[in-house]
Image (tube, rainbow, N blue to C red; front, side, top):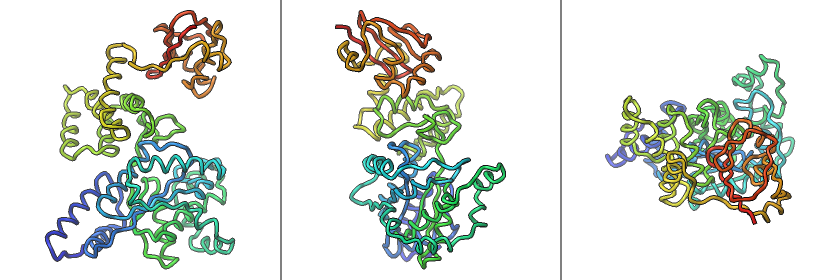
Length: 419
């Protein structure tokens, strides 16, 4: 590592190094990472720190926030953040960690998702200090000759070294040619914006290192690589994912964020606090010690997590209100203060006869389940009640003759009003 001419520069390096390494897994290449950070500080030349996001769904969840929050830390340290919205890479689909070819998305669907992504990015990042690009800016103008030139920069043998491709070959699962282009496209993004450092999850390590190779091939200084852990979802097993339903969306209401946080396994409490919140190092150490004590109830710390998450993405105090409602509903078995209301006329506008309400349709049309089949499963599993009475008949019908409270799952309520 380079020597510093002053103690102030040395302290600045130590401060930045402590912040950058918190929660990180890989900082590559070893040694070079420290040297280039030190050089950046000595020359007062901010690093261009890149991360790409493919808008394959409309919502950003706290699993995404692990990387975005690290970007914000770089931003607060004075470095230049460059976000790449992968409108073209999303059409290919990242093969990282995939056991089969991803379904391809249309460009119009991707751009709709991208609109919501940009709004959600800036719940965490400082928009005025963020550079943002769609990789269609360069891929849309490339000729077939340009694409062939890119393809010459990397060998098939090296591409097939990645574990997910190796596993698929061993199992006889097809690999489409277009999937081989994904790492090259992600790497070319780094060429286009001259990234000094690229971030991603640990499952992105291969792609990030390909970026170094491709940059060198195009005469660009190879980027540093930083990987962050993959956040497990609410089930504690699978990667957090909207498609798996095991996620906490940063755009969700405070009560949903808090309620979902309460459902995580106890062994994930510390990880969530470390990777998804601004909990101080001292408090994290206290929490680690508390969780190791047999007489400490983890629920109290889990409630602290839920409050912090709700306050991060909503006005201060939202977490406390969500906690109070949770305790009232789940601990004291009371109803929430505010419940959406639906009157008979509203039901009729939905095509539902108030004198003969089919429970499945009521649940689906009021967006308490994604589909009729999901509503039936919830009913059969005992997750639906009317005025506190559990309903398990998937064909259940009833007439709306009095005020009725419908509860679906643990946190969804609807008040039905006759007349």
